[in-house]
Each structure stands twice: as C-alpha cells, then as structure tokens.
Length: 90
Image (cartoon, rainbow, N blue to C red):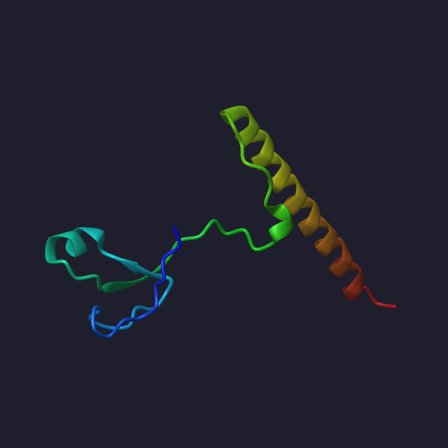
C-alpha cells in the first residue's frame, strides 16, 4: 500500500521535516512527536561502490567486512603514494 505523506492542515498539527530523529518514549506517552535535535545515524558508507550483497551468516559478514576494509586500505595507500611524490624537490 502506498501512502500519501503530504501535509494536511485539517488533520496535522504542523509541517514535519524529513531526517529528524524523535524521542519515541515521549511520543508514545504524550501523543506528540517532537524533534530532539540529534542527527539520524547512518552506516558511514560514502562510496556507493562499497555497498555489497546482503549477507546470510556471520562468516559472510566477516568476509564482506574484510573486503571493504581491504579496498579502503588500498585506496588510502594509493592516495598517500600519489601525494608523496609531490613534495620532492626537482
């Protein structure tokens, strides 16, 4: 089922902005959803090429983590080796 989540002034108290986190306990107690001022956590993956398949067990999770770490280390080493030659006198 697809929901229409647009602001409805007859039904909604005020406009809600995306990507804000809430205090769920207070929302359930008071019936009011307020922003607590913290940012939503994310997985920290900035490069979409590092996103891989869904893992099915702990061993696949370890293999995938190692693969991502190795790719990142290779990228960093390449970047460092490229910048080392920049400061050498000619």
